[in-house]
Image (tube, rainbow, N blue to C red; front, side, top):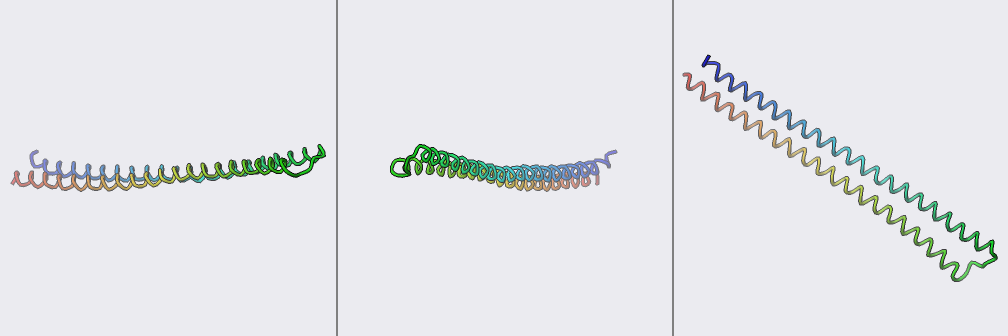
Length: 152
């Protein structure tokens, strides 16, 4: 029975190594999955900002068209303060569009940074798991050697 002890040490070390490597690889896969989701969210944020910007352009055209049509219907002339109001309204819509695109880009960059962080964490978890496996292998080897030596 005592002669089985070294083999139990070796088997335990082997199981521990396999478990560490499996955990390391699983952590990396999970981190890469999360990074992929963050990358998708970045794309979605940019697309949503573009759609919102397109809607703002549409609203701008409608508002300016309504202003011009109202001015024409009332017999007014497109000069002076009327042009100033139309110009200011157009500028406000342009600013809103730019802000929408900027906010979408900021959101997308935040997701991209998260994706990079997930990938970094995955690599670190894998390296840590491999180092732990190496430590278990060395420790198990030392215990096995010591047990064999004691048995003679």
